[in-house]
Amino acid sequence: MENNMRKEMEEKEKQDFKVLGLSSFIYAVVLTFCLYKNFSGITNVLWTVATVIYIAYVARKYEKKQKPINIFYDCVIILLGISNFTTDNQSILFFNYMVIFIAIAVNMIYMFIDIKKLGMCIQSMAVCQCIFGCIGELSKPFTHGIKALKMDKDRNKNIKYILIGVGCALPVVMMVTIILASADSVFRNMIVKIFKLDTLILNLTGIVIMIIVSYALAYAFSFYVKNGKVYINEKENKMAALPVNIIMSMVAVVYVMFATIQVVYLFGHGGSLPQGYTYAQYARQGFFQLLFLSCVNVLVILLTMEFVKVNKFMKVVSGVICLCTFIMIFSSEYRMKMYIEEYGLTFSRIFVLWLLVVIGMVMLGLVIKNFHKELNLFSFSMVVVICCFIVLSFSHVDYIIAKYNLSQCQYIMDKNKNDDPYEINIYVDMDYIINLSADSVPAVLDEKNEKVTRYLNKKRYYKKLEKYKDGGIRSFNLSRYNAGKNVK
Image (cartoon, rainbow, N blue to C red; front, side, top):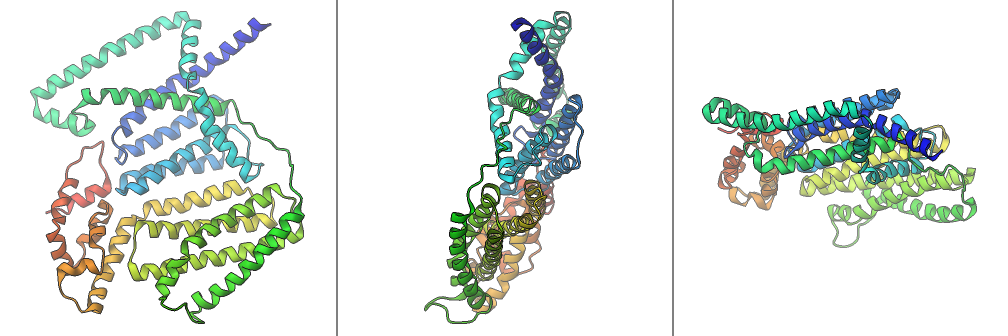
């Protein structure tokens, strides 16, 4: 009995290796070629397309059909790959990769595990469980491979000969390429431009490690999700509503008082501000507290819906808190707008404005869920957040920052009646603009203000742009290319 079960398990592992082994290895090689020391090149598009193909291949082999939500995530992955090679903003690139990996995880989970009918918190926990749970399966691609090779001895001979052939061919091809490159400068330049790996020997260790790690992660995650190894507690052990009603009612009263003050003082500019405060200072003072409370309110309403027995009174109180949260969000947006008018744009200020819009959209989803239980809040929130992020990702934030801040420059100098170009940094943070990414260069070069131009010359700004001139085919980035072509 035990022998039969063991044989069945080994046969199953062999079949898993047939599906995931070679495909995961090819995907790892493509990923390494595209991303090794190249996180913002045109090969990002190739990597994201390869990712979508890999997911579709695994799904087809395990007889899983793609649903509309899977197609949505496929499009998201490819769009963010395109964004990676069109921007030079390191913060955007970091968030792009984070969203891409989350989209890959959710895409595969939705393909293999039915979690759509569960609550948002349970779905979120299931996704986290899959992401971190696959770590325990990292040995599987290697153990499965060894077992599969032992079981299929006849085929192993061919595989062994193929591996020997590939292992011998790689150093031979490398040696021939190096000799030919030394013999012809045109050929050498072409190879260097295509691969940007003129120091291949030095990078070889890093390349091998990246292939192995990528292979193990792709195989382990696919194997984990395919087997549906997610523990989900679907029992509804909900709390009594009465104590929660009391707490939320008292909080709602305070929120209503606060919301009234916001309408009178901030939006209506009525009443009198505390002594010594300007509206910009007043706007800055409570911004982060309101942002924090808005996030807490979203979390509280969500947890209440998921884990408390909701009654009509609670729905009314939740509705009041949601309304007050919208006022808090609008108050935070309004405060930040006033602060930006006084002190200009930065990436963090734009990101916070974006975050407030996202919080507002998620809160809107909670309001809809409060009255229409059939709404899949997790899918709604994911689609809203990702769509909003794609807009941010493609907006070239640094260009907007430079354009806006420079447009305020002349106005501020005229207002202060100062014509000294070297004191321009007192009124506009030119050093911040100068240190922005290549995305900002077109806005800076379009500036016609002579005082700005003279300040840029003083800081050798145009000399710094020469670094954007050079770049291989593999690392080609549209933003850096546009910045470099403007250098005279």
